[in-house]
Image (tube, rainbow, N blue to C red; front, side):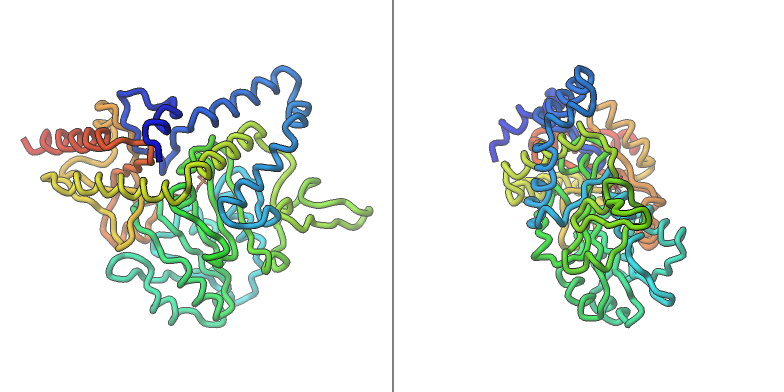
Length: 391
Ligand SMILES: Cc1ncc(COP(=O)(O)O)c(C=O)c1O
């Protein structure tokens, strides 16, 4: 990867700021910014409908780009407005029977757990192994005929852990359970091959590691299970009104889409995905992992700083705490050093945080466009904050 070129393509890189929040909402490349602002300007000139008409082919190509990234067919992709919306679309379309339950991992994301609670779908938690990843032997024991679905968070919101996927799919499918992969934090930083993974559903968002604009996401549904899902809501885009008392759902991914959406953001998502494909997802994964490891190594040498990432397989999310300084205060102090990070609180992944006895962590998530020098500056800033506390 041409590190200088990707930095030149990123207007948010200004030589001062160290940007470490791609797990929150990343910095888009220039092409994404131009695509979005260009379309908003065009809407102001000729109206939204004509502007969308001019880009009809490009808009359809967004589906194909997302499909190509996931090694899937375009018909399997629905374009939505967030990862959560995609996840809710899938879960609310599953025909759960009385007595069914789902299995979740210890790192289940709060919105997912909340929806199970809200809709009265019982869930059990697959315990983690000694390294924190889900315990495959425990999963094997828990999969009885009543488990309809495994809700699998690939990479959690609150640590650099990567959960195994293929192994979970093999166990779950052998007992007739679906697997829904929450790939919100892996899409754009790790290679995602839906065919190789074998998952039944996969959800992602544009603004994080994919470097797209806000307000968009996507859902992949494995074609073999598509007719087992019935969308909970439809409109004139997802279904056809064929006669007064009859509707016909579209057979492709449009079933989960609604007619109205942010056209500029969708075009921006397409530009972001094309940019990633051009760079090469394998190269991106390698670069992200290397930067995160450098950051972890740097932080772990500091007195009063604890790196909090569990797992054998760790990705681009780096979490840590500083003795005696609340994670939110670390974030604020780092902002004064022009280092952008965020925090993850107990509420966002409660099962995992309670198991590890942590209330909150500071979260740094360097993308491939962050230089070694910037990572070292971030470590030096954390050192200053930790030292300030100790002296
Ligand atoms: C693991 C995980 N799943 C799902 C989501 C939700 O994504 P969105 O805000 O795009 O709905 C997040 C957001 O941070 C996340 O970290």
